[in-house]
Image (spheres, rainbow, N blue to C red):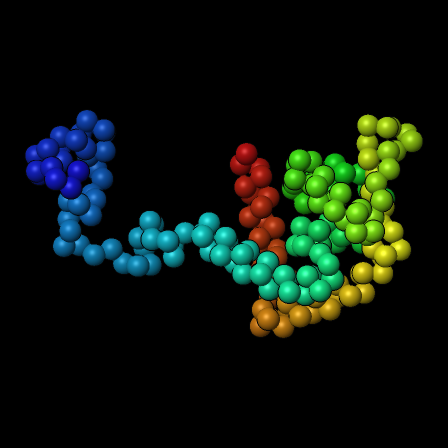
Amino acid sequence: MRGLGVAARASYRLDLGIDHVVSMVDAPEQQVSSTTDPLLLDNQLCYALYAAAHRITRSYRPMLERMGLTYPQYLVLLVLWETDGVTVSDIGRRLRLDSGTLTPVLKRLETAGFLIRNRRRSDEREVEIQLTQHGRDLRAEARLVRESVMCQLNMSEPEVQAMRADLNALIENLSAAG
């Protein structure tokens, strides 16, 4: 639309049924505030969440590497430290991962000696995941990981809990929306 004249732009907007829209092309002298322009990158919730997730994952990486873990492997172990002996589908639901993503992570953890996978006797279609002693022992070291990340966040425990509650509410709202 930039090369179109005023009449052509008006016709274009009418053809699209958007004659009520005022764009920056129509009014280049108007400056949109950086706090209200919905198309600025810094005003995107999705970008803020993406950037925060990327940074926090990076903060875990050095400590997890010393433990011989990747971030997804660490998440799987967190689920198992909470409830050992769950199925692959239980872990997938908890982490919101499909089995195609989860299975390679579980295989690497099994190869490293952190867990074992067995078919359930009650239903052989289900694979049950159990920690080995080596996997259980890693839990003590993982406490230090959380403490280190908490120090990097420069947030109090109540602030972290409030943020986590807000993010969980966001996840639930988006899940309910489809």
